[in-house]
Amino acid sequence: MKKVLITGAAGFLGSHLCDKFINEGYHVIAMDNLLTGSLDNIEHLFPNKYFEYYHHDVSKFVHVPGNLDYILHFASPASPIDYLKMPIQTLKVGSLGTHNLLGLAKAKNARILVASTSEVYGDPLVHPQTEEYWGNVNPIGPRGVYDEAKRFQEAITMAYHNFHGLETRIVRIFNTYGPRMRVNDGRALPAFFSQAIKNENITVFGDGDQTRSFCYVSDLIEGIYKLLLSDYHLPVNIGNPKEITIKEIAEEVLRFVPHSTSKIINVALPEDDPKKRKPDITKAKTLLGWEPKVSRKEGFEITFQYFKQVLS
Ligand code: UDP
Image (tube, rainbow, N blue to C red):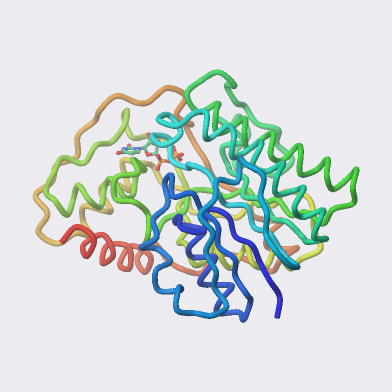
């Protein structure tokens, strides 16, 4: 039985990864410090004898007894309001945390996959974003703590690969949504769904002409799984290339929630908010045979039911 360590295991993506690896027959060691994660997301896995949970901050030395085959590093505050509130922790988990996990991977002779992000492209000047694009990041802006930590993470991961011959994988994750997102994490879809359900104003930042491309969580998890098991060590974009403006997505959410009396309003646009974002997924398609399958209609239905239940 293969053993996998998942950091950030009680978070949105981490918890879905725990489910995936348990279902695929792995022994899962889940690690989290619950800074932004919640045990509710993994509660159902505790009875499984091949699931273990460690409460630990990976910015500090990480010890795991026994052998390890894989490490997936998904610990980090990941929404703009979270990393604004926790800038130092965000920098530490992406830098010191990644360093500790690379050291652990080396000691255990394990393969490590690190969660990078479309934020490494900053406010992109190339559209759609290919993996070859180096990005347009403001290091000292409000998003710099996350963007630069993730850029450092990619650099140190490549250094461990090149210098120590470590087996490494880097996934650049684009906007993802689905059950287990925190209602109040400040991101567009949790905000819009909860506002529409509660009949509150739907807060579109700026004029809403900025674009994003939203991927349903099960598609993303499948892409990550395929990348981990592939033999490709350079960064790979995983996301849904269907681009939409934020104004349109707000209207779509509103149409989705029956009888909502919410109105869409425009509020101030946060500093350094990227104007557009859309992954070029040619690499994922050709190298991994992966592309998203879940339509927004299907993904929205499941997500709507989730938020309705959380808010009831
Ligand atoms: N956004 C918005 N209203 C909200 C939350 C977000 O209009 O209540 C916008 C935000 O300005 C950005 C887009 O939606 O342009 C996506 O924001 P999110 O925080 O979900 O992720 P980002 O892609 O910016 O990291």
